[in-house]
Image (tube, rainbow, N blue to C red):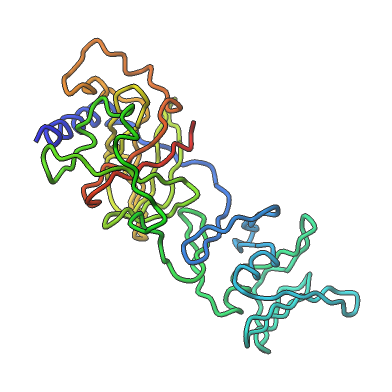
Length: 313
């Protein structure tokens, strides 16, 4: 009950303190390519979006990730690129916009090009030619290939660490109590990293990405997820955890099954960090790099807390 009441108080204070502040859009980010909901890590040449809006990718890396085999040849002074995967064959020529996909000509409106000593081709050409589903995510600037088989924190790869490993972060232990079971602590914490995003939190929401944005000199954590307003808290060693709710009028419904919530980095709710209102506490001194973890306060995960290693340290 204490946790529920304090959560309501903190939410009201957050709205009164920052109710007029939203968060401005960040500058365009790097194009990400996901295969079966796992981000592909490009070793050198990166995907990009050209002036026509086509996502261009280094052909060898993507085709091999999709299980294809690539070969090059010369004909009439032109470079021919072929990708084979089972019975599928994609054949294209550097400098041309058309390609042969299983013997049928298709025009993609974008030329196959050489850049950074790599052959770049329209991603849709490769993926469609090799029998994969493709979806462009304009909000995240992501290209989804294949199935959206999200990692889940319930999976065996995510090991449960006991709360005793995190004693230094538990000066206000109520944040480590189950919302649905008064006074009962979670069994432990599962730690994740941004490299493992997107990820589903047990039976709860999907966390797609997390960014640090600014408006009018204030910093906000922007979290894109499948739900609205799941609270978070910053875990600070040998200090009180800093509880945050989303700024209501900054909420963005992306209308694609995802939403973006904005959480203030510095907030007057920290005056409640002991469970009581401390008038003299100077909450403005908090710096995000002091937090080792950003934890998700979701009641839909039954036995554990999910804590993301702070990517902004």
